[in-house]
Length: 163
Image 1 (tube, rainbow, N blue to C red):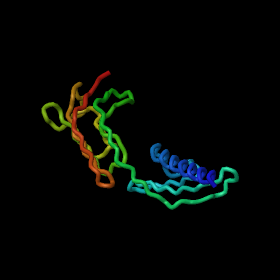
Image 2 (image 1 turned 90 degrees about the vertical axis):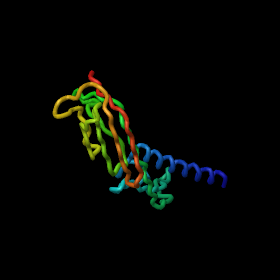
Image 3 (image 1 turned 120 degrees about the vertical axis):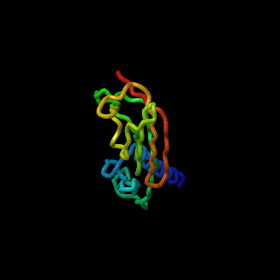
Image 4 (image 1 turned 30 degrees about the vertical axis):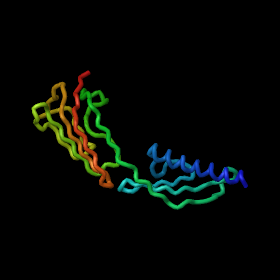
């Protein structure tokens, strides 16, 4: 009886590890994780339904209820970029996931608005009026809201570096 309890606990731990790994690694629907059914909705919720399968004969031992995990919004804003068209760090903007609304504003050192975006897919390419902006630091302001109304605000300096 004691061994059966220990095996059940170990199976439960393995299931939790699979769920955590799937969440951390960002697995999505259709990923080949045995015994794990993942589906994504448009509101950035992940649904898991775990099926325990016997190692010996692949018989289904049990099926869990569906659980819903709502990953938190994550945002990262770099402090420099190199707009030299080499394919690496050529644009500037917030990076992240779980973001519903996004707004980026960039000012030069005289407080003049030089770039604005409402999409994380539209980043600043280092140009102002079609010309390359000079090397130096620029003030930015990023505001974002998650699907669950969590807010992110960051302001700071970004440097254009020429290499």
